[in-house]
Image 1: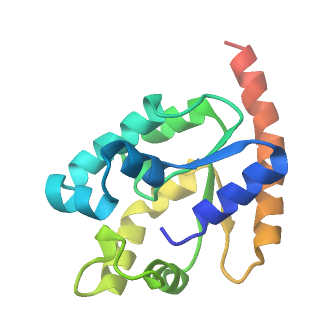
Image 2 (image 1 turned 90 degrees about the horizontal axis):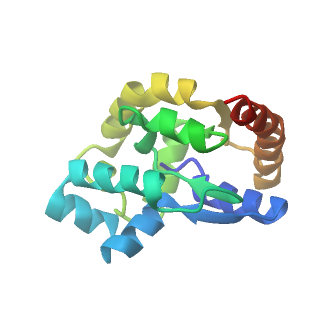
Length: 171
């Protein structure tokens, strides 16, 4: 969260002629309520089920950039599912940047709606870091202009999508 996934995803999609969807926004639309209410009324476990369902059946299979929530790849089997569907790029930012960006719009992040958001962010990152590093190419967004991050993502996508297509053809 707060790494720039949605902004970068939309810009990348525009530049390469794809559509972009944000998993969180799509889940909110399907559930007809904000994620904060899903967490409050049905719990994080239910939200994770909705995330997995979105990846399995909630979007087109091609010409699409998907900005996924930070907890999605942590679920068992989800990273493998994402990698079968396309190129995975992980955006990274420092805890300070994440907190600054996430809190900019008020308490809309249920996982940070706690007494000590910094402590929670650090705990989440420590738990998720090994999975993020295994997810795919990791790109730092701290202090970098959007255009630079977008260009980096597109370079990775061009390189890895060729490998992905070759791998699909070998099956």
